[in-house]
Length: 303
Length: 303
Figure 1 (cartoon, rainbow over the protein chains, first blue to last red):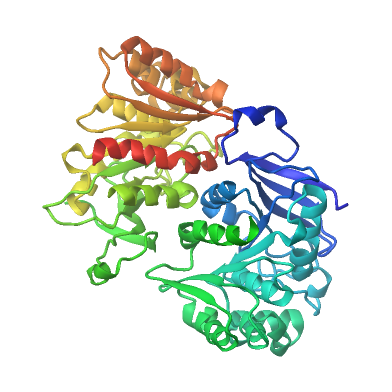
Figure 2 (cartoon, rainbow over the protein chains, first blue to last red; figure 1 turned 135 degrees about the horizontal axis):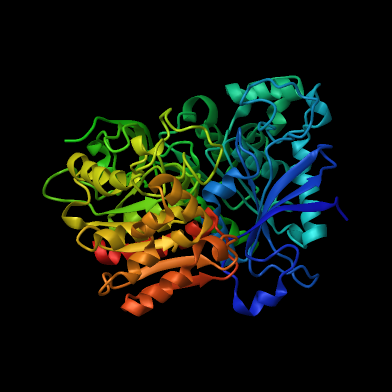
């Protein structure tokens, strides 16, 4: 069993059904929780958000599927929930799916200098296991997302068993979602989608800086680059990969490069449904606008 | 014509329709704007949020209806938009309604001491015209909401003419919505609704403190108290007044008191539809969950 978990806050987001009133538990159906724990991966305290649908049951006979939402640079565990949560939770409620919203980096440690940079260090873990000092000690976000959180969900919540988990993310979190799914495959992640993902980080300033700093060289990031991973595939993994991207996104040309991924996917025959959304930018309004589509997309594979 | 307006930010929240691509203007359809101006009422710079639906036209032949959303204690012009905006904007888009989101107090002035209090001063204007020093100089939120902003909307945006405006609010903003509508009537505000409103402020700590400080005595707040205004009515004003209230709201018993308003409304025969929502608290998740109902409610009277 996992780490001792502590509820930081619990907020009702789905109306309580009368017949269930007496069934309140520590973790409550129809609520959005923030939960803190001592992470074995990062060796720090971490906080994650967790939405439990009304159908949630903490009994062995039923297991709840889950979507991981990975956030972007500067975000913590709360941004998605605050700005797009209500729509996401309602969509997930409809399908009986839980949503977990992890933080984007360790932040309760004193080993990393305050570098005053939005794209490195706190809030910018890039979903890799850092090998370079001073980040190597705590920046183990790949293990945290792919091993520790799934294990906590299975053991402490009865969620996401039998591979009933999918992954979605925004920007750096879109990079996280795509690379984790492409690396681990369908037995671990039933489906993958992304908003405005960093698609080819070895070829953009954000990615180069992160891989140099965390991994010691940009080239070492190729195994965490969605386009490179796609190019290396022998055959398609997923029926479809859903991506939404705003046409007025300031970062589109220099940092995100969805066309690079699309080209690589075409070569291997992996279907990618890339919606270029006219006039939208990189903000959470964009996520909120289309998150229901993404939840419905994952529900096809999870439910 | 009004005050010079300055666009602080413009964010697309409704997908751009192809045929309209060439019609971009300074104020853009399907976008959420933050707009700053020098307010004549508060004699400070003020910022408001403004959502313009795709049907918006800045021509005399067509005028767009509008919902005013008044926020609660500690909020500024952005909280509603960030946390409930996406759902509200989609609902308003469906009906062709604009939404204006004013700030809750002046905040660009140096005449008010930093009192370090969440329920007085900055973020806590209570939608009255203060008569007491030091607030009397700038705290003219009643005039700002009922006179200045409607005039700006009509003259600079061609919005809300012919009384095609309604008002909704949360907590202190619910108090603002109810009192403004009950004071000014149906010729000025077609409909009114509220989330978790302060219904009887002369009889609760928040209201007493505000009225004493801004107006000089609690009793002077009776003309800005929804329950007192309701009691003073000769006959009903509105077909219906919609109120949503969470049953797990920490402020329900001591500060909000919807039953006082309900009792007063029953006596005068004013219909109030009060939904007590099981398990919900005072947060923006509650607003986000039910805002579509409120927009649909106002659309019945505006469109």
